[in-house]
Amino acid sequence: MVGPLKPHRAERAPPVALMKGANNSKTFFARLHHWHATVWPGANIPVVLAIVILALALWWLAPSGLASDVWQLFVLFMCTIIGAILEPLPLSAVCLISIGVVSATGVLTTSEMLSGFSSPSVWLIMFASFFASGFVVTGLGKRMCFIILKYAGSTTVGLGYGICFCELILALAIPANSARGVGVMMPILVPLMKEAFQSDPELDTAKRIGSYIVLVEITANATVAACWLTGGAWNALMLQFMKEVGVELSWIGWAYSQAPVALVSLILVPLVMLVLVKPEIRRTPEAPVVAHSRLEAMGPLRTRVMDFVFDYAQCLPLLNDRTAVLVAEEAGVSAQVVCRALAWSTVCGHLTPYTSSANPAYYGLGYVTAKQWWAVGAIVMVLNLVNLVTIGFGYWWLLGYWQ
Image (cartoon, rainbow, N blue to C red; front, side, top):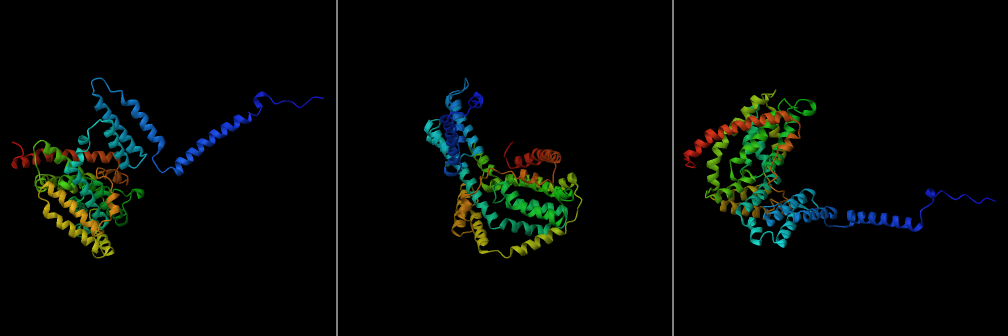
């Protein structure tokens, strides 16, 4: 009697031990992944390991002619940037760890490493950013803009000048372009374009007035940053660079030396955009109506807003030099927190003021094509250069800044 046929070698079942080992291996990695994703509260371990391996691989590969400590500082800086992008931990934690690594490796001395924190410019930017949160959180910035648009927005050009004036006033206290353009102005302008003027890229009506409003806003947003020391986060850094070459400017000094030149460009913005964009709507009676209805919906000034206004008024007399600006901003932030005009969680959760470009957000609305964006930007750049070389240099010569 013929016994049962044995299975082909390739068809034979693998040994039980081998199957068990494979399953255990698979189970181990699955459990490890599950633990890392659901249980482990710390950093993203694979990302951290990748950054550490990259740093170790480059640490001793300094190019010839370059000092080893300079190369190692570059490696640590590069790894910090990668960590900021991949975020194995929150950005603040990544920076804190980077400082610790720089200190532990001896690439920089403690005094060199912490020298930036002793600069008044850094603290000025930080407190000015905290202070700016009050305008957004309390709604005071929007209220001011609605009041301006109520009285200046009956024509297209008037609406353009109203937008420019809103930016000019907001730049007195909000040192980040993105905070002004996206945090305050965009929630006002987008409903105005889509609801009041029926100007919507999805309806193929962007040219009615939306393109004009967007280009006026982003141009004014950048222009007013030069008017005031608190108009842009980088202004305080420029002030620090000027001090290093022997040039001292107070807040008032910055204003009377920069604002007149920048205002010339700002005055031209609505007119230049009117010629370049050619909006289909030239009269805008809807804008004052919308602004009036929004003001009524906001109601009277609340105590929280009045606290913020009072704090800001208290700080203004101190704006006579750079140190006083810092004292003013710090005092204002402290008073806002005490009065609950500004929540401490808002202060702690404030994004960096260096993320200060509102352009991507406005470009994403779809009112302006890439070709139009670059073309208008090039023309505005040339006009600004002409203003700088003629009026700017002439005005600064009268002030004695150059001979």
